[in-house]
Image (tube, rainbow, N blue to C red):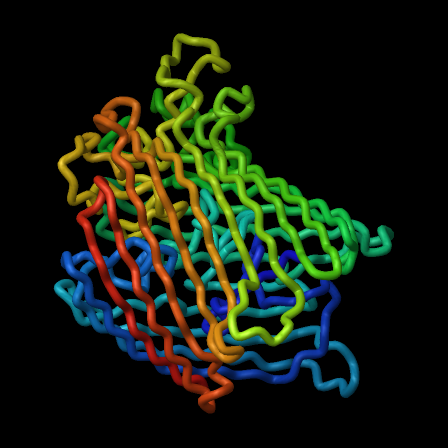
Length: 494
């Protein structure tokens, strides 16, 4: 079952989701009659560690809401509100309007105030037009226990944009519910004050299909997501410091065309802008006791995937989820195993004089024009295992001033979720990565890194809206400083 989660993320983050597009979690693509709704929360959290750096799994894939340094304290508040515009009693809602907002005050070595969400939306049946900053992630992969989707995970603050998207699976007419789709199309803006570029724009779209009804025992999924950075200013590989702009080049960005009305050799021998994404496949099997999901994300950035020269690279995963609980004091309800590999990149040579099928060195999340890379406020937008150079407190080589000095990685990961004493939820994440740096500046000896976290939290219904969460985590290896840390969070839902 593919579920989707958007503005109700405060509660949805506690669910295990396979999530290609952002929206409320729903089981079927049909429109239901939803009442006027609102939700508000207040939270208080504290973070400590032995090294002054928050452990990897405490601060990664948290929408940029947990600071990298420790000790730190965070106070937050959020709300969502939606209202039906249809006043017809007993009929499905056609139109709804709403907004969401979230603010966090971070007290640490680098104190600041951030706004993880601030948006307005209009919904018509299963479609939504939204504007602003909104939590979301893209790709066929587990979104809570896994490592995060390759191209767009939950690791960075949401990027403000205008987007038209479906909210859940939409049945294709005349197929009896056997064919469904989800889609999105949006454009946004990157932050000011980036290290290299300025005025940078985002183009993003996705399309996923499903074969099988909602309750079919076997379902097949497939689709893609496409992201591009374009239209800004950069001192590298541009003409007069300006990247390709204008409507004609916007069309080139949409279709990934190398044609440009600029004289930039970079644009005319590659693509207009920095393009990346994944082509995803998944198989879901439903039995009486279990739901089994098998998925694969194939990576593309510089065209190597078209020639299958980087086909070894990708995110592979399996999720096994138990459907029934039998009242034991300790349960393992969900198991996720993933293997991420990005070391091929089509090979070590990227010579324009070679035939396209022989070119490699895709240099994931780095780009010759956008040298501050696939990042937002210095966090990787995609998988957090491709680490920012600024994150590296190691003695390994730095790859000039490119965003990452470590995009050739192999990661084995296990995620677990269950219940304890029938009233407490526990989760665990355990990852081992082998890190080779980049082709032009490899790490000697391929340093290994083990990162782990165990969390325990209560159901807020037990304490009249209060939820408490305790997390213990560690980093052991040659990539990051050896670290032990803890996080405590108290949340009140209204």
